[in-house]
Amino acid sequence: MGPGTRLPLQGGLPPADAPAGPVVEIACDESGFSGTNLLDPATPVIAHASVDLTAVEATALLTSLRAGFRFSPHEVKSRQFLRRPESVEARDWFLAALRGRAHVHLVDKQVFLATRVVDLLLAEPSYAAGTRLAPAGREAALALHRAGHAAGADWTAFLAAFVDMLRTKRRDRAGDGSVDRFLRARDALARHAPADAVLTGLDRARVAAVQARLYDDDRSIPPPLEPLLPALAETVLSWSGGGRRVLVVHDEQSALTADRLRRLQRALADGTGRPVEESPLAGLVTTDSRDDPRVQVADLLAGVARRMPATPDTAFGADLLALVEADLHELLGAPVRRDGAPTT
Figure: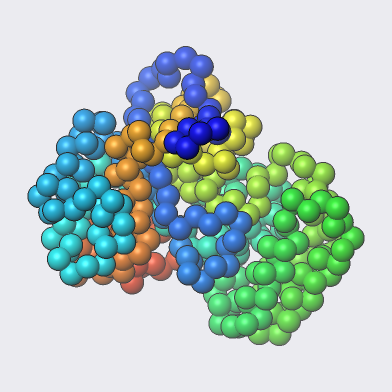
């Protein structure tokens, strides 16, 4: 295969027919995704951004950025756009231009892992887990995160043991002691939070049974270390107000397989009381970001949201917080409600 040759796109679930009823088409990309390396201190947050711009509108926006603010195509996508002092005006203009046309879902990776502990080990795993459609475990996950975050190194060790125990690409490791190491890490963490209901509820038999199901490739369980799927679910739910269905155009991601998307499609239908053929997720088409200006805008927005602190008392902060929906955590320097607005 010669230089410049592109491989076929992976993943996606294109709709078989034109979706019926009101449909909104959005383009999405993420920033901060590092596979299953969820404890990398350099990227503690994932931002999943979406826009409902047309290709013409997205092209015009990018053209204005490059011409009006003297950015090259590379700089528009680079950290210089986020960090150099002279780019402040460009950032403010960019965010203001997207008001009402964009959405950002932020995921704190440690909070995500806390929700996975609860969703996988204390409940029956489902593709609705970790989203607003499964609120029962969210308070427990927040309590675990608060207790753990105050425990320092023992919290980090607990999360690392949890991640190691669930790495399914090494299925020959069954019986390797990873469950025992996780439970020892649980006991060490419990010394800091002895009354935490999540820690006391982590039964060895249950933990081992979930690991065995994952090692047996039980596909009814969502991939345990994959935050992109619940982030996509929240994005779809946020755009599906008024009974709309959402057709997603997404930068290529190997995590977005057809099987997983079908299961997510059904979970979103069940969670919103709709038949599966009317699921909020109408379908997902993957694309190469180099070919779609809408995805390029989403990519830039995700990078801005992930890297830049913001507070509501600045123009930048107000514009960014208007687009942001934080995942169970106070991010960007200000509490954020689930509707994306800053709290008062």
